[in-house]
Image 1: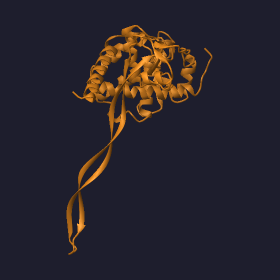
Image 2 (image 1 turned 90 degrees about the vertical axis):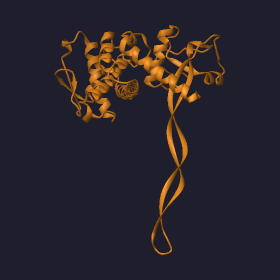
Image 3 (image 1 turned 135 degrees about the horizontal axis):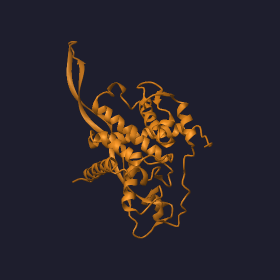
Image 4 (image 1 turned 60 degrees about the horizontal axis):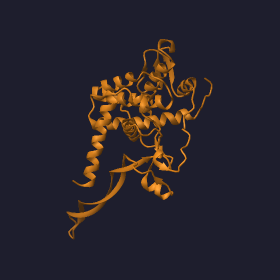
Length: 297
């Protein structure tokens, strides 16, 4: 088996395990760390990698810090790993350019003025996504490095609500995003157990809207069962991650139960795609919320 085949097999196994845990274990929303990023590059990993790293951290029970780095990054900056440190895998697709020969028909004119079709071989360049795997180490396993203070998105519950209202109209009704419109229906806050439950539902509907706004949702196909299930997994995963980022307390079994009801209808590949799109939704919503910080409680 080639190295690429081994990586692909490991990646597929990772997706399958991640799907199973997210659909069956309600504790993942609470126990897992969100906001995982590269310590030296300061860039966040994809939500899919964040969820997988969080799952592995919870299983191992060894690390809590959301900062990671590759062995090369650690070595190049003059640091060393503690003896016995165990790494974690991350996966991503890197564009890879290949050159391919194809047969192409060319029309010529012969000496008598007649069209003559001949075939010639031409070279064309094509970019394909190449699956890559890296091993990263938690910052707690790096000798002599100062662990930074945790970065949080400082937003009040009122601030979150007002920032969403800057983007969409919120009117009374059962929780729903009006497909193709900048409009969300929501019950009154008093109809929920508490403000956090209200915000969790609102973030789910706002995730639907954002999914559509950034051009990833096919709203015309939303009525088919498979597509509807896919969109629900995107929205609920987004809402669960956002609740973690924003410190919104929401019953864990509700996230897992809702994901299970729709996620079981998706193949592992469809689930993988849904998580990736949820990552883009989360990034867009966090960027939107950061534009206006309201500190009042």
